[in-house]
Each structure stands twice: as structure tokens, then as C-alpha cells.
Image (cartoon, rainbow, N blue to C red):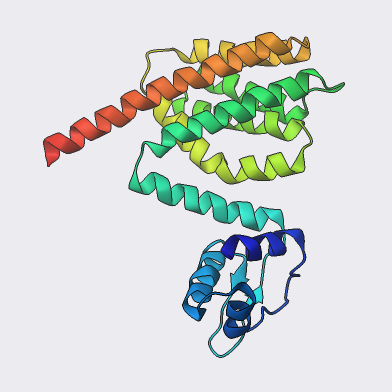
Length: 233
């Protein structure tokens, strides 16, 4: 029932500002108890799709896909707080998204925008000054800029909502290996060069390897954190 109502909201069949039927009406339509209806509405409210007010019927409040995906990102954050192993699942999602992103860009007539080059330049400046924090922020901005360069608004909104989490992962994983900022910068410069040269296979392989390496570093960071917590227990 919750999924059916959600589908109606996402498709626009239930419009923004529209009030849902009473709980008893919904229960009758779906052949369920009013308790089941209340539980379904609570699920929708958690997702940011409806709003309940005392003494009033439930109202549809979703206004765009950004709000829905923002709620999704909050849910993902809650999962991470309960179990850091979910961060490794985020890395799988990153790899799926970003390898396809470089594939889209290599097929584009104008593959990257100024945002990508600016992020890479910021990485170079941070490398030259030994600014680790600035480098990791520019690193995350580089990947975000590649996604934005596809021109796919849905993909961009989705990635934007995960961006804060991905930045944190980059910050954590960058502290584990002994790889220098020089080497890290060179990897990103090579990815950009391959995209500009329309080398789809090369760009995908390098992006995949970079994210897989980060996932390996993340496993080390999680293990170290667990070992530390175990000693402090």
C-alpha cells in the first residue's frame, strides 16, 4: 500500500497540495486495517512525501525529485551511523555511477566544463602547497564536476545529495595509504586527459581502479576504527 501511494505521488497522480482520503477510506480501498494505513502514511512522511497535521487530512508535499533524493540521502546517512560497513556499499554505487559518467563524457562533443578544470587546478595548487584538506575537497569537487558535465539533471541531483558523504569518504581514505599528493593529482589529470582524448576504455578502467583502491583503503580505516574501539571498550 505504501509503495502504491508513493508511486501515485511520484507520478503526479496525487498532486502537490492534494489531501489524501481519510484513513478509513484508504483502508476500505486497499482492503486493510486503519492501523496499516497509519503505518504506510508514516513511511511516506519519513520519506518527505506527505505531511500530517493534527485534526487535518494528510497532504502531499513532494515538490520535486531533489526533495525526494534529499530524503534518500538522509536515510543513507542513518544507515552509515548504525553500521560503517554501509560505506563500502556507497563505494560500489560510486563506481557504478562514475565509470558510466566517464563513458558518457567520452562520447560527448564537449566532454567537460570549466568546473572540472577548475577543480583539477585547485588540486594542483593544494598539492604544491601541501594542503591536504584543500586537496581532498578539490578531489571531491573534481568528481562532482564530472557528473555535472554530463548535463543529466537527475543524475546530478542524485550525486549532489550524496556529495557530502563522498567527500567524507575521500577525506578518510586519503589518510590511509602512503600515496603522495603528486600521485593522486596525476591520476586525476590522467582521467581528464583520457576523457578529452575520447579514450572510453582507458578512462573507465582508471576511474574504476581509483575507486576500488579507495574502497580498499576504507576497509583499512574501518578496521582500524573497530580495533581502536575494541581496545577502548
